[in-house]
Amino acid sequence: MNKNMHCELCELQSFDFINGITCSLTKEKATFKNRCSKIQFGEKLEEKIVEINQEYENLKYMKKHAYSNLIFYSLIGIGVWILNYFITIRIFEVGVISTISLSLFLIGGTIIGYGTGAYKFYNSSRKSIIPKKEKLDNILKIYQISYSFVSEIKTNLIGRRETVSELNLNGKKTTFSNME
Image 1 (cartoon, one colour):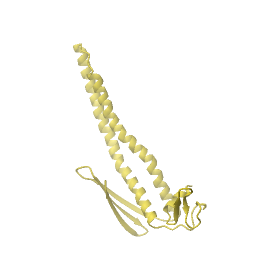
Image 2: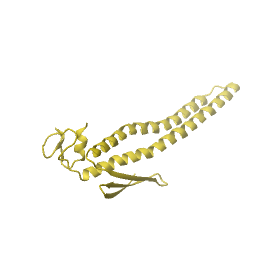
Image 3: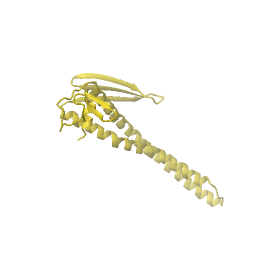
Image 4: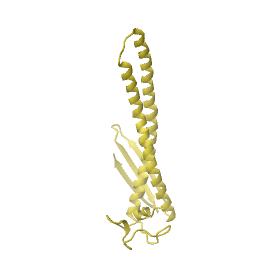
């Protein structure tokens, strides 16, 4: 179990460049087994819950765009390749040698690459964000802390995203809003 995550949520954490995160009470790194008896939750816990859950919500938002980009740009790229096939056949029938075929083939591949790039970015983000959320939820379960997090992501006409989130932590509701 990563004890540092417990300390990152605690108000009593201190940090120095030699030892990293330590307890301000004991001046040592974490030595507890499953849970710390001296842990104190406050703003750091709230900030970490919001940070990780907003990343998770952005990941879910990114998922549909990654898949739609993958499908859309793959279809366009394949369409360019099909067009290239017919143009190439026509060029060879006329008996002309041209670089149009090669150019269209590369353009189709570039378009497909654009769609797969968004999917690869989503996939790599997923591999880092989901474990962070699972660790956070498991640690909070140890301390019997429950929360609910609701987030709504809107994109306006010029492509700016606005995220409005609400955190309910132990009966205390907090609303957060940010523009990207």
